[in-house]
Amino acid sequence: MNTETDIGMQTPLPSVLAFSNIALFLDFDGTLVSIASHPDAVTLPPRQRRLLSTLQTRLKGALAIISGRRLADMERLTAPLPLTLMGCHGAQWRDSDGTRHAERLESEATVHLGAALTEFSQRHPGTVFEDKTYAFALHYRQAPQYERACRDTMTRLWQAHRDAYQLTEGKCLLELRHHACHKGRAVQRLLDTPPFRLRTPMFIGDDRTDEDAFPVVNAHGGFSVRVGEAAQSQATYRLDSVEEVLSWLERQTRSMSR
Ligand SMILES: O=P(O)(O)OC[C@H]1O[C@H](O[C@H]2O[C@H](CO)[C@@H](O)[C@H](O)[C@H]2O)[C@H](O)[C@@H](O)[C@@H]1O
Image (cartoon, rainbow, N blue to C red; front, side):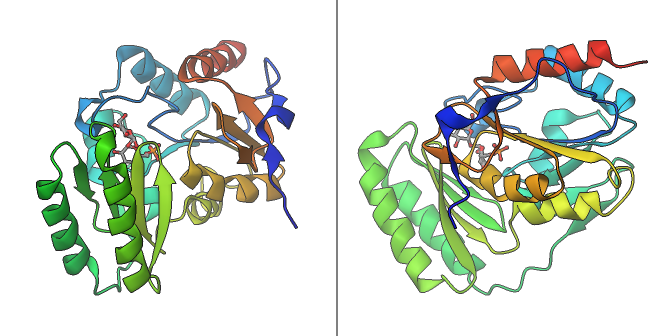
């Protein structure tokens, strides 16, 4: 059964929700911060810092960022906020008290994939290779002339390692994700533990890998929100841009008791 909805069919989010019992899960790039030319060009601006800090307090800690980036990147970008963070699409995570966890990685392919993609990006100037241990991302945003070569190489590597890896497409990005990387399982893991347990989940995200989380949120009677344009999505609701995400969340904080 196809449960995806044409993006135009999604409902705009109500202007204000009963927000104090929400467990809020936020994607990072393209949701909380705008897309930039290079992964390292992104920072967390003061407006987002203030918002996250307020949400963390008002939701009594039931706030997590679930990103495709490495956990270490997310810790650096959000420091010193004491947030629950998940990196590598949920394969690594940090509790709000600073305790770190990681999925076991049983793949023997990581060294081979890392070496092959390092060599590829050296031969194709402008492409960016990110080795995230659980996932291998190849960016062509600054070298669109190599998109075809990136696709061919990633497809060939995936065919050799499809037992352990999935090939997905992001924004000017192709990614080999170990099966341990799955935002749906990440959301379920948090919903099984305090302070998220017994709350209504909301996930806001803009990308293909966020689609893994939407069915889990829907099954819990929560709010799945896709940001921006997509051909199809399993999200029930839509916000159009990072600016809309920020102003919608700011409106919720104003309506919540202190
Ligand atoms: O799950 P997310 O937090 O949305 O992370 C998804 C990927 O985000 C980053 O790449 C994207 O953002 C870059 C900076 O704006 C941009 O240059 C790139 O083209 C985008 O694909 C990050 O580098 C990846 O590791 C994440 O998987």
